[in-house]
Amino acid sequence: MSHSEAQPASHSDTPGKHHWHRWKRPLTMLFFLALIVLFTMLAQRIEWNEVFDTLADFKVRTLIIASGVTLASFLVYACFDLIGRTYIRQNLTWRQILPVGIISYAFNLNLSAWVGGVAMRYRLYSRLGVSKGNIAKILGLSLATNWFGYMVIAGAVFSSGLMRMPPGWKVSSNALQDVGILLLLLSMGYLAACRYSRRRKWSVRGVEIILPSLRMAILQLALGALNWALMAAVIFTLLPSKLDYPLVLGVLLISAIAGVITHIPAGLGVLEAVFVALLQHEVSRGSLVAGLIAYRAIYFILPLLITVVMYLVVEAKAKSLRISKKPR
Image (cartoon, rainbow, N blue to C red; front, side, top):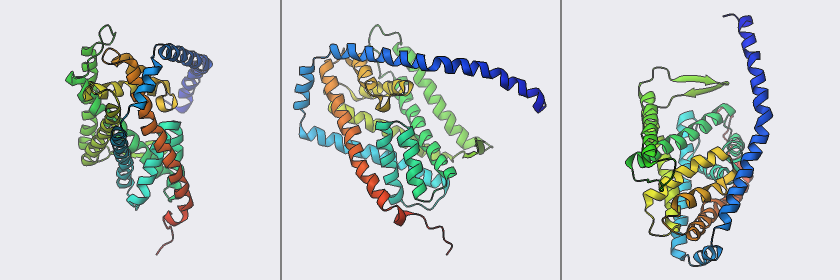
């Protein structure tokens, strides 16, 4: 087909796009309105005296353990970018990369992926002399590491039957097991592509995508899954002891998808709504909300405060950290 013959088809798509853009804003507003109503109803059903009493009863030892696991999670996430260094084959030291990964993760969690995952990485890596093309590769690899790791651990938890849905839910435990099997197949398909695919390079909007080696892909899945496991471990430490870890992990994995769908920065309110909905038949709502408030303070707010200082330090030392482009 010639270019002139293909042209009308592209114009025929335009009305559909305009139609979607016309309805996108009101539908989004209605969706957020429904969320506000949902969260208001949820807040009215919470015994807030129990929440405050539970928060006051937290032991220092528990908070220290949760903080230590949080630190481990941030270091694991920062290692996503260490894989990226190998992927782009650029001479960066771990002392340059780890602060970028940690700062980006904290801003990503609190201010959305566009601010933390994208804008902050572009800012910090460009200060280190990394090209825009290579920054895009690091971003893509980090995204793949996170979500293929998610597929592995969610697939394992859901397909194992350890995550049981509450009675009366439309999504049955059997359906959740089927989703788990599908996720495992997708992650195994990624590994198979990395091992057997003959074509190793693609170009998407001018950005070259190179399929990683099988060894690198396995490391991606392992680190991605480990980070999700550590996130759940922080919540598990702060929730009532009668809850099992696989159950807490499964609920976190379900809430993550709900957070992605809503696009609310930090998943504010979504995480709490999902945990209360799925676990209120196991423990009281007040104890759940108290544990999640502590989780937000330790895993979201505290790291953000620390990384703001880190960012200012990195910016101040940017010239000394910059990769020298002068030939020797």
